[in-house]
Length: 134
Image 1 (tube, rainbow, N blue to C red):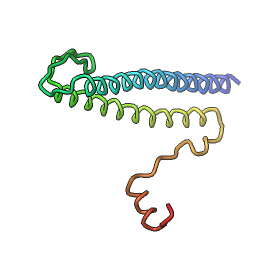
Image 2 (image 1 turned 90 degrees about the vertical axis):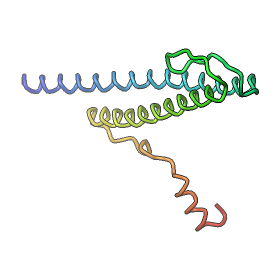
Image 3 (image 1 turned 60 degrees about the vertical axis):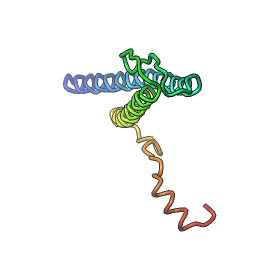
Image 4 (image 1 turned 30 degrees about the vertical axis):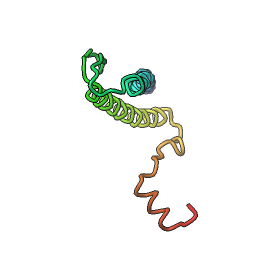
């Protein structure tokens, strides 16, 4: 009886640990999405407000404040945006694994369609070449 109780407690603790990780990843995604939107807005503002390429401006990349020429500033911001995008993809992949783990711990069936991935450009082109109406 004590061993069943101990095992049940361990399962519940593991379920809570995984649930906490899911919630932490969700908060990370929200923060990264906010940063991605701010970076996108900064790129658009620079392109719109500073048309001359020799102008210098102050930008924030990550946690650094820099004074750069407009082309270099756009390049740095674009690199930051790409890095944020990769981090978001990584966290979303981890999130799917954690949710799958949590459902296993709760003895529930896996979510159907939750592990779908979008088709690549090569796959879409292959379909278009074989189906003229697509």
